[in-house]
Amino acid sequence: HGRGSLFQVSDDSMWWAVTKIANWIRANAFELAIRDVRAAQRGIETELYDMAWRATDPDHFHATTVEPLLAKWTRLFDKLVTKYRDGYVLDMDTTKTRDDDPRVEPDVRRHFYPEWWLQRVGYYTPADPDDYSLVRLAPSRAATFGIPVAALFVGLVIGAAVASAAANKPRRSYLRVPL
Image (cartoon, rainbow, N blue to C red; front, side, top):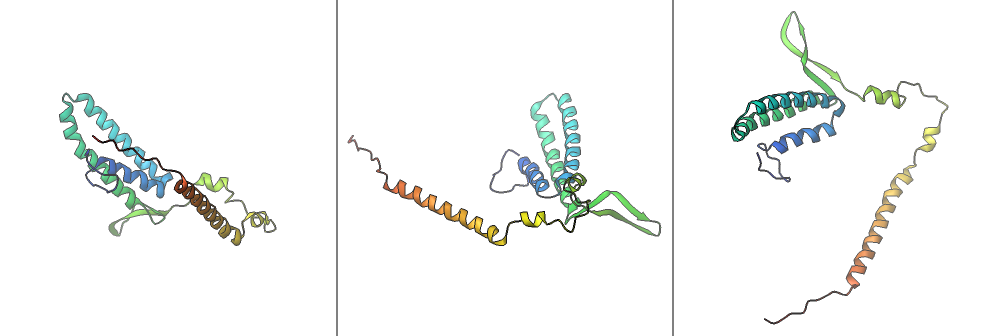
């Protein structure tokens, strides 16, 4: 569990198990998924604290806790990927059943921007059809294309100037001392 590489995912690395979760929730439904992560983390920390308190041999404690801990983080990643996907929350903890159908249906709902964000940006406030302030503030298509092109050109000019200065700089050479 101490082996691994930053350049290749390893399923038996604790670092990769936790990193997959952290990176995945940042790119997806962070506001929703962080609740599941924190709940799992609290449970794992409490369990490990209790086990560490009772442990008498640190090597035995490490040997008996690493595999189950890695398995828990791996299962949490799988649960998050299953639960939050394609703009939906698939919640198996709150299920719907029908009397005439023994199958269990998960609670599926679409997730959108968080409520606090929608209120802050005025999502629920009706727009004034005569207000063109946002239209005037929006950059033109030429500006959105021209700015990156100008930045690229400036970067190339600066890079060429630095490279030219480095090429013209006299180089120091070392004097070979015969032995």
